[in-house]
Length: 143
Image (cartoon, rainbow, N blue to C red; front, top):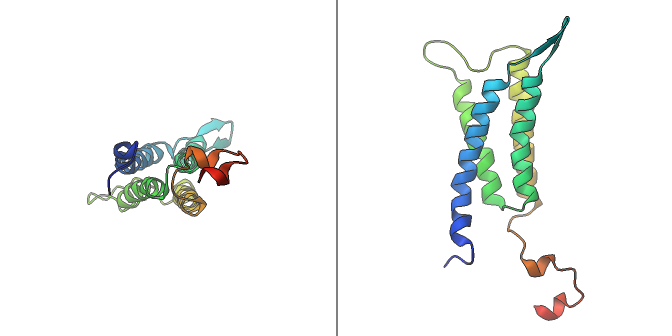
């Protein structure tokens, strides 16, 4: 099987998506603890940013019809980093604390990434060709 036009670029898209998922996960883990204090009220802007920042790339890859392997690679890269770093270090410190924000991050962000990845997986795989996007009545004749 020889790659078609852009085949080499598509081949690089899977490792790039895996790396993107890993990088986004590291940044999400870094900011999920940040809060803004307004008097006695704490607004967990870091948690919101971590959840949105984690799920939006998967949704964007799906919207751009990057293909199932690319969407799955993003989700796998994100999950791999988060689940490896959740285990903590041998010194006893943890990246995600066992409090409401930590559990909220794990539950909400993980579910958002997995749901967005599964939706992207189910939404369709291969990128559409120009002929498939053409709403012309002669589409049947061109095939």
